[in-house]
Length: 214
Ligand SMILES: [Mg+2]
Image (cartoon, rainbow, N blue to C red):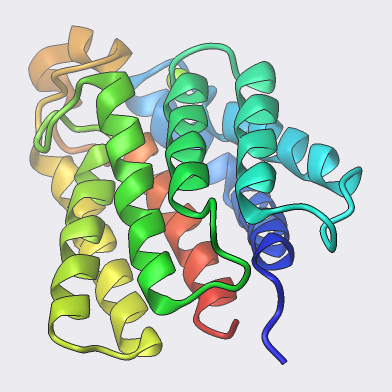
């Protein structure tokens, strides 16, 4: 039996929260090198708020889009600055594309990745090469679309997505930050992986582990 989309999305957020918590200190250390050393803490707070919010929902009787919209509100409420509005916008865009989905198809997976990246990009006005989370999200999205066009199955598609996100995050090491607090460092931001790109990989990996079995 295929699980309903709301339940799958609910479990996906719980998986993301666990994964972020497991990497919290690492993310904070990355942010310590080029920012204000709070990225692990804020991401953990945000996703814990999401899972608390979703725990109060009856996932058998709500739409996946309602789960994503609630996640957006909870994340934004918990993380006011920087990352908060970006992921809130990502989840809201994903809510829109899943409005009519009762179960999740591979096409929905791709639509969700595309929508999340569009939400982050619209809200942050960022581009590839700025040394931000988009340096993981944009290549991940391109890989998803390409794999879909190539007729890849769910496992192959997600492997391509993760591979592209990881390569994108690693590439931020040789970028000079153009946005956010790290931009004040200029050339001194060179040599460090962007914490937002690193957490994007963790999020996508948790999504993969949940969705490629659903
Ligand atoms: Mg920070």
